[in-house]
Length: 209
Image (cartoon, rainbow, N blue to C red; front, side):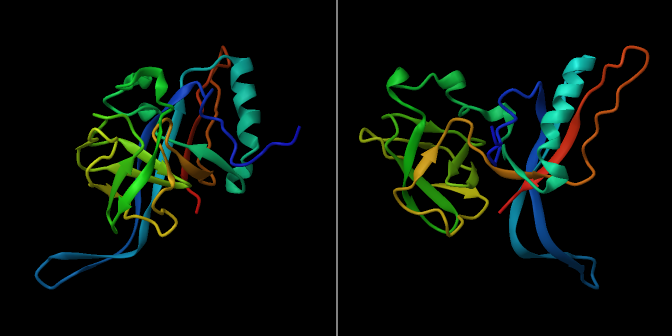
């Protein structure tokens, strides 16, 4: 069976995202009085570091093979911060309305740097630090917001700034919110140690747009 990209490797990856943050695309200069001035050359991209636990020999070879499918950055995978598979207020999907909610709302309104959601449970809380996926765009909430009785939240700021591909009424995924990512060439390490051959896998990745 052919591998479909972006491929989902993190659902079974025996490890963690030790870092998931912005890679800023900026130009910086220093004035005569020592002030540093930064200028954006584009919206930042998500960048991550993933590390496995200590793996036995067979596990190590299995994951070496799985990661070869990414071809050192030529192919993409589904990337998300593994610490945030669910919103902060709802660990493991403990939604206000129980299992009736599937973990996806819709974009109700937007500005260049804020969103509001609809079609979420009444009383649903967006916490600072939550991630929201709209299409291939991944955002992090910088403010709290609570849904009213109609399941519509107030507006809350997000970063990155809202991409043009995010539109009103688009689905807003709240479970394992992700974006396509590519392996950063040369960052994959899977060295085994003597005498037992155990080792850990680490790699870095960046958002693919």
